[in-house]
Image (cartoon, rainbow, N blue to C red; front, side):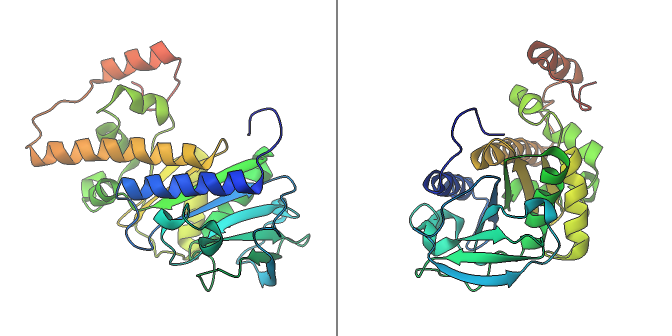
Length: 275
């Protein structure tokens, strides 16, 4: 949840989305229009001064826990690296109606997208799940396509959550601290499908980041959208080390289980990936 004090206003939320999109692009995790971002705000947000256009839309699934609240969502096909340059062109705002089935979509005259992200069902379902269960005021979800994480998921031996975490979390002492819940690994599922949505919701209950095999990742945070991107960056760094080690013929050992345990003990980390 946000820190004590006033909730962020629209301008601040859009700046954070711009910073997140830029960082995702900087680490080569969002080629062209790949990737998407959404932020749930559980307080009153003034939208009309930046998004004066309005239209009613049907939502792809019921989201009663989000009724009356606002979600900022990237448009389909928009480049995450350009959000900071012109948020109004790349982002829309959904104000969910009381029925949880429909919403008002607020956009700018500079809007450059026909509809919101094609992964909207997964974004909404994850927000609905966490807000309903945990009463959050702020929740951010980021989908990206980091090259090394995605590459590893093309190797059958890595499409197992336990094996994946054992190999990727061993390269930096920070990994067990930043990713103490580990990375959930999902099988390949058709992007935007109901099966993808359901598996994603289940995975993000147990983990704060999940790997969509042969596609990309999704991360969430109830602190900020940039914190979700931090998790992606830590995970991608571990995957890059693992890739480098594969190329080098497995010459490096990484941190041992005992060394990871020492780090966890020092920082008070309780994790299923500490042995």
